[in-house]
Length: 268
Image (cartoon, rainbow, N blue to C red; front, side):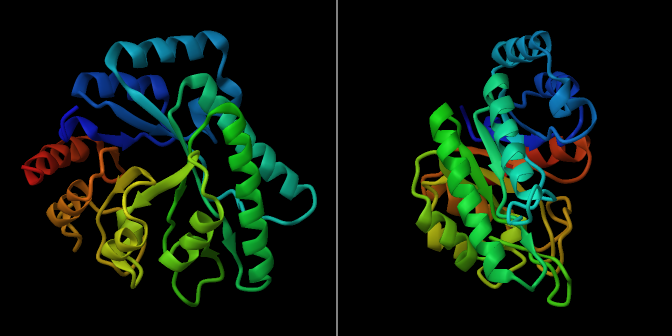
């Protein structure tokens, strides 16, 4: 599969069947979906629907991934809610396995400045449990590096810097646990895109997520509207031996098709 064919997109909560039709028409081979709301909701998947989706994916050589919601707090420690987060992650893994998803993107949760260590402890313990479950069913989990929030914001994501991500990747060495590397998030912190790649390399990256920004706040701009040097990013990743897929997460579907053509030219 050539470089362009490895560039997919995040369809979000849009109906998977519609996303597959569009992907097939445009030669897209990798799709992320979310199953928290709308037509992809966890409760909507009958055996017949699952079989039809899998048949379409096989026919058009489309690879699926399930992107859980970052708004579900993996660092939750409150009674009842804590159990619910465990069940949420398990249910997403179970659906991923039924659909034939090759990866499931997870997050480290968030905190409110207070009780920070308790949040960190809860987050790491939960991801350890979740990875153990993924191992038992043969699923691959990818931890996404999330975005910086302003210093005076009440809520802050965990695992948004190299230092915070390192805690998880040092503690969880399973082959069923990798990284979903979001370059526009890395562009928001002093580590930068290069800093993440210096720290972790590419061996554990299972998906590279693409959007642009100006390095100041969390927005998903079209490539070229911010300050990310995409040719340099692709060169660094590919020269380092990255052979996985990419996921576009910006603009309209037409914007993504245009960007995909430009990305292919960047790669020579």
